[in-house]
Image (cartoon, rainbow, N blue to C red; front, side, top):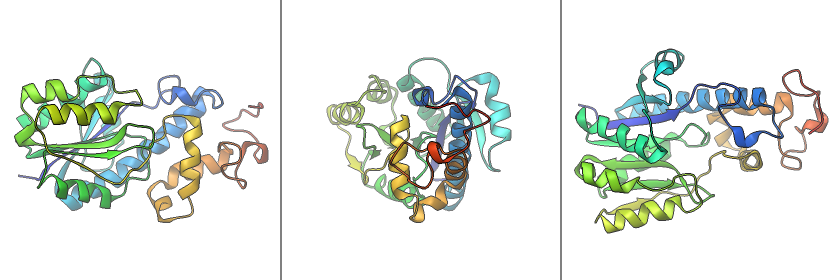
Length: 253
């Protein structure tokens, strides 16, 4: 029996379906390729971390029809499941329930747009769940990019309330922790990270690109550099004004 599940939530990288808050200034095609790079980077790091931490690596795909194809493109060791229908909180609860039903002692849920989450963060989350019921890694925008819950707290009634609130709002971390407190769950917060929800968030990635964090997202950085898709002023070396356009489109932003 492994120590738990590490679930990566993902979508198929189709133009117009992913990273829509990046368009404009990115085109839908650029946003889709950016997401593909993010997903590949996140899956590579997550798969290696899962193997090292004795976790089952699981890819939760939003559309059931795309589970097989997206899982086939993931690193070896991942298995795919469908997220199912409903709001994000419903889908998170469903994935957690599947983990518990499979006998997992705990489950960790992460998104596919936090490219600088290192194995050390996941290891810290695993360690924290030996002492608490719920662990979160906050984002700078008021949300979180990783949540872990141990099996003792994964009853149907708890999950039904823990994630039963709007997720794409600035108060999601506060709301989740407040619900955890009302449910009597002990919680722990890891150091704050970031995810890439909007075009402006790329400035956070630019700020760490010359650190060791850059090793975690080589594909994403290479794509942004090659096509000059950094926000103005966030990276003077690689901006759209210095590039020849992106993905065959040289229009001004």
